[in-house]
Length: 323
Image (cartoon, rainbow, N blue to C red; front, side, top):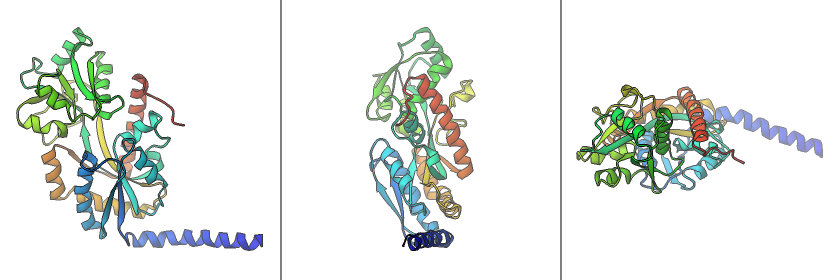
């Protein structure tokens, strides 16, 4: 009896093993579920919906978006990681795929997934009122060095990606700001600056764009390697001599073990979507950066991001081992 059960179990395993290449070759044969770990209307939701609408044209199947907010993406990450590795359940991530792991929120990071593509990045940025006394980042930093804890900067709550960008500047330059936390994220910062309620704010260009276009605020430094296309006159921190780079990059994840052939098909569809005129127009108008990094490039980036965030979270006292 035991022998028959063992033979039957082996037969099932072999059947699954030989079925994988066939399933991969036919992929996709039905709609693909795309999980977003944030509510509708947020940045990841808006960007993903435009991207998925274009990717469907190249994938040949509908992409069904499912919003599952909880823990700033943590709930969705766990669900994606536990899904069947066949390419039919995927989802997006932000920089929280690193911070959650190193803040003890969840015990997994990017290594628990197959990374399909990095398609977008929103770098941090430091913004001041149009008539603020500081004309350059250097003037701002030097003033902060003379007056530690006196310059008020609005930023997201501790552990957020943009907040970490501001803290990276503090650590690199040995300065201290008076940080005004915003529990609802960074979105209120530019308005607080324009209204004169704070001296500066830390926010992604996409968040600051409307008030920047209206001439109410201006950037002192964008935390990317190169200038953002929608802000050609906004200098980066790096070009001003400050080694401060902080991205909130978005990737698409598939469960670990998803066949390479399936990952490659997904990458091709989403790469074409990211290069479409519709997506380019949407992203340029919103002030976001478009990327088309493949699995290798994305993994290399995420490994560097892990190292950066782990060290930074340790330095600011937020590092915690997940249980």
